[in-house]
Length: 109
View 1 (cartoon, rainbow, N blue to C red):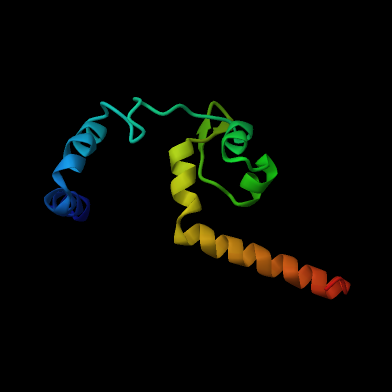
View 2 (view 1 turned 90 degrees about the vertical axis):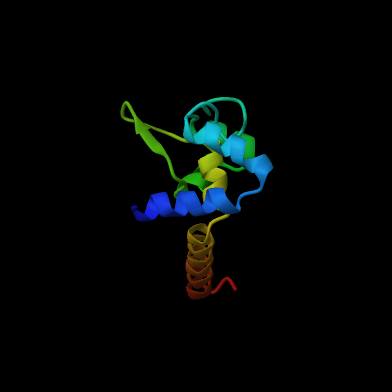
Protein backbone atom coordinates (compact mmCIF):
# COMPACT_ATOMS: atom_id res chain seq x y z
CA UNK A 1 0.00 0.00 0.00
CA UNK A 2 1.46 3.38 -0.96
CA UNK A 3 1.71 6.27 1.50
CA UNK A 4 -1.29 8.18 0.11
CA UNK A 5 -3.56 5.14 0.29
CA UNK A 6 -2.43 4.42 3.85
CA UNK A 7 -3.18 8.02 4.85
CA UNK A 8 -6.64 7.86 3.23
CA UNK A 9 -7.46 4.62 5.04
CA UNK A 10 -6.23 6.03 8.35
CA UNK A 11 -8.25 9.23 7.89
CA UNK A 12 -11.36 7.21 7.03
CA UNK A 13 -10.97 5.12 10.17
CA UNK A 14 -10.74 8.08 12.55
CA UNK A 15 -13.24 10.38 10.80
CA UNK A 16 -16.60 10.96 12.51
CA UNK A 17 -19.48 9.12 10.84
CA UNK A 18 -21.16 12.34 9.68
CA UNK A 19 -18.02 13.27 7.69
CA UNK A 20 -17.46 9.93 5.96
CA UNK A 21 -20.32 10.06 3.44
CA UNK A 22 -19.51 13.60 2.13
CA UNK A 23 -15.82 12.65 1.91
CA UNK A 24 -16.63 9.53 -0.07
CA UNK A 25 -18.82 11.50 -2.50
CA UNK A 26 -16.01 14.01 -2.89
CA UNK A 27 -13.44 11.30 -3.64
CA UNK A 28 -15.78 9.81 -6.23
CA UNK A 29 -16.10 13.23 -7.87
CA UNK A 30 -19.83 13.36 -7.18
CA UNK A 31 -19.70 16.62 -5.29
CA UNK A 32 -17.22 19.24 -4.21
CA UNK A 33 -16.40 20.15 -0.61
CA UNK A 34 -18.80 23.10 -0.87
CA UNK A 35 -21.69 20.63 -1.43
CA UNK A 36 -22.67 22.28 -4.73
CA UNK A 37 -20.95 20.01 -7.22
CA UNK A 38 -17.78 20.92 -9.05
CA UNK A 39 -16.46 24.32 -8.01
CA UNK A 40 -15.98 26.73 -10.91
CA UNK A 41 -12.73 28.35 -11.91
CA UNK A 42 -12.57 32.10 -11.40
CA UNK A 43 -10.35 34.99 -12.39
CA UNK A 44 -8.00 36.76 -10.02
CA UNK A 45 -10.39 39.70 -10.03
CA UNK A 46 -13.34 37.44 -9.16
CA UNK A 47 -11.48 35.78 -6.29
CA UNK A 48 -10.38 39.21 -5.06
CA UNK A 49 -13.94 40.48 -5.11
CA UNK A 50 -15.16 37.44 -3.17
CA UNK A 51 -12.41 37.78 -0.54
CA UNK A 52 -12.52 41.60 -0.51
CA UNK A 53 -8.85 41.79 -1.51
CA UNK A 54 -7.21 43.62 -4.39
CA UNK A 55 -6.14 41.31 -7.25
CA UNK A 56 -2.59 42.68 -7.06
CA UNK A 57 -2.40 41.59 -3.43
CA UNK A 58 -3.44 38.07 -4.36
CA UNK A 59 -0.92 38.04 -7.20
CA UNK A 60 1.86 39.20 -4.85
CA UNK A 61 0.86 36.48 -2.38
CA UNK A 62 1.28 33.92 -5.21
CA UNK A 63 -2.02 32.17 -4.62
CA UNK A 64 -2.32 28.74 -6.26
CA UNK A 65 -3.97 28.61 -9.66
CA UNK A 66 -4.36 26.65 -12.86
CA UNK A 67 -3.37 27.47 -16.43
CA UNK A 68 -6.40 26.99 -18.66
CA UNK A 69 -5.94 27.82 -22.31
CA UNK A 70 -3.05 30.15 -21.57
CA UNK A 71 -5.00 32.00 -18.88
CA UNK A 72 -4.59 31.74 -15.14
CA UNK A 73 -7.71 30.65 -13.24
CA UNK A 74 -8.33 29.98 -9.55
CA UNK A 75 -10.59 27.86 -7.36
CA UNK A 76 -11.86 29.66 -4.27
CA UNK A 77 -11.57 26.69 -1.90
CA UNK A 78 -7.93 26.09 -2.94
CA UNK A 79 -7.13 29.76 -2.35
CA UNK A 80 -8.77 29.68 1.09
CA UNK A 81 -6.80 26.58 2.08
CA UNK A 82 -3.58 28.26 0.91
CA UNK A 83 -4.34 31.44 2.88
CA UNK A 84 -4.52 29.33 6.05
CA UNK A 85 -1.35 27.33 5.32
CA UNK A 86 2.07 27.60 6.95
CA UNK A 87 3.57 28.27 3.51
CA UNK A 88 1.41 31.39 3.14
CA UNK A 89 2.13 32.65 6.64
CA UNK A 90 5.87 32.33 5.93
CA UNK A 91 5.40 34.21 2.64
CA UNK A 92 3.56 37.05 4.40
CA UNK A 93 6.29 37.31 7.04
CA UNK A 94 8.93 37.52 4.27
CA UNK A 95 6.97 40.21 2.42
CA UNK A 96 6.54 42.25 5.61
CA UNK A 97 10.25 41.98 6.42
CA UNK A 98 11.21 43.08 2.90
CA UNK A 99 8.84 46.05 3.08
CA UNK A 100 10.13 47.01 6.54
CA UNK A 101 13.75 46.84 5.31
CA UNK A 102 12.89 48.96 2.27
CA UNK A 103 11.36 51.71 4.38
CA UNK A 104 14.20 51.62 6.90
CA UNK A 105 16.80 52.15 4.15
CA UNK A 106 14.76 55.09 2.86
CA UNK A 107 14.63 56.60 6.33
CA UNK A 108 10.83 56.52 6.50
CA UNK A 109 10.64 54.60 9.78
